[in-house]
Amino acid sequence: LSFKNNSSVDLICQPVVISGEEFFKKTDIQGINTTSFRLLEKGKEIPIQVDERDNTGLFTRKPNYTLDKDDEIVFEVDVPKGKEVSYLLYFSKEPKPQPAA
Image (cartoon, rainbow, N blue to C red; front, top):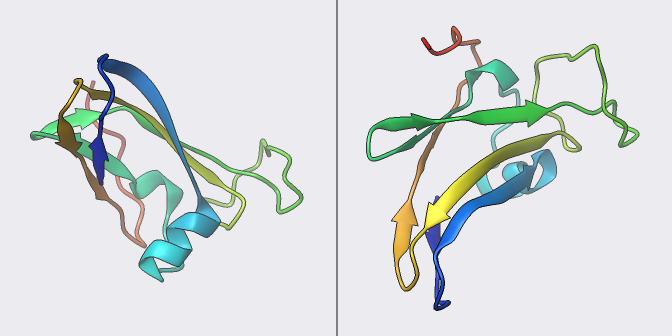
């Protein structure tokens, strides 16, 4: 994922929200385990969360751990003024252990 900042100010902790539907349109990949997502910038893991919804648009307390079209992948990026920054988004159909603290 690449983010370009054409403004004259640094963008710090800018929220990024990618819907499951948008993810499917860009990747054409289904069946992703929501616990498998990892985001890296220059080899450093960046906090990421997946907000699961119940297919009516409401958040659910009982996730199915599969990315659905109304779920949201959420994270923050820092992009210095006049620069472009790349992040790597990893995912799989299998669950991954939580990253070490």
